[in-house]
Length: 196
Image 1 (tube, helix red, strand yellow):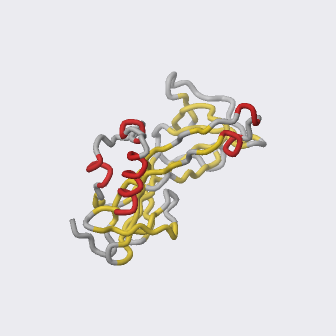
Image 2 (cartoon, helix red, strand yellow):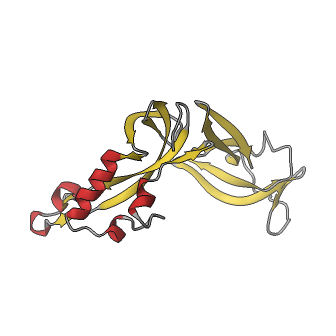
Image 3 (cartoon, helix red, strand yellow):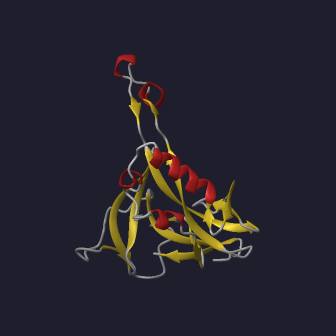
């Protein structure tokens, strides 16, 4: 498949995080042993130059990491996979926890209409800024070390529990309802869609 500059794609790389246990986790020297950690990662990116993909992070930021396509595959990753397999690591072990089954699956670069990014979350005061709809929302309590999920509720003039439809009486200034903002990357920009 021929890709044009600006096309969004997903592709796979192989990662080798193998190493000595003392270096990786600081275990006692007498427990030191070689830990083999080889796995695949699915990456997303944009074709930024002829046959060159730049990785786009799930935050929507450009990574500065580039991969070169040759003959429709990421040749450097295919070579890395072959070297690892030649060292005796089984393909099933490398592809564990992924949807990949064959080397051809691993090498496939797929064009995408957009890249789904990680969600963003926005919080509003339950007392001072209730929602203008009666759809279910998550209610969180602000605490010193973050937020705790308290309930699923809806607002129809008063806050009500989703399961029981009974009013919630204990809403305080520390209670907030959450709006999830689904984000996508397309045309070099991030677009946001609110999702309750």
